[in-house]
Length: 267
Image 1: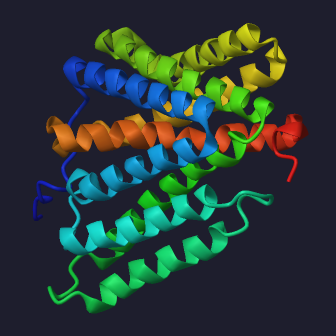
Image 2 (image 1 turned 90 degrees about the horizontal axis):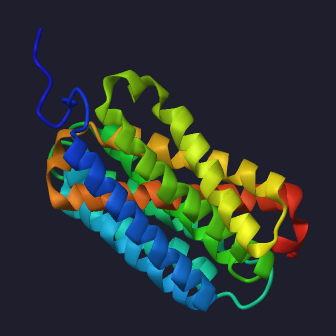
């Protein structure tokens, strides 16, 4: 039976050094997004745009995709279109242009496959990986609507705190007896981090606890999927993995806000 290529092989488990680096990067990215959200929605959109550019720059190397130059172009066009669609709007509904931007990104993804001249190896893997990256950037842009209201900003801060704390709980994986409990620890840590934000802001503890548990689980799950990949031995894929494990939590404050804090998204 033929052996898998190096791009398809997966390491047994991430090293403690890798986990520590990812935790540091997640905390830095979360902190920058939190500061940008507190400053102004447009600054948050710019910060998300920088994150989208970094993802485009490093995604093909992170997951070992063919035709890396074309992939970078597709993710640049699609990712920036998604960010601009919410960043330039100054009235509700904040996501009014997002479907058009997503459609543009999907057209670019499939057009790239049509124009490839390398025989189109692993075309399904290439398309699905690009769509996944665009979906994760799409989760991130959900932070921008939250930054337009005080309640939304509080929800966003809770989700970012949960992502940071969950990355720190990953360090418990150096003890073999706790490796099977890392998801539970991430959910617990995320809940505690978000609850601390709620208590500091005088918000509803129950809502923020739910937010933190969900955001902590999402952030941990993204790192758990990406961290065993061999390319994460290098700096660029580590940065991409950290950014994506923060962007993915953007869906948590949006859904929790719609369900339990309607004033966060009046439009």
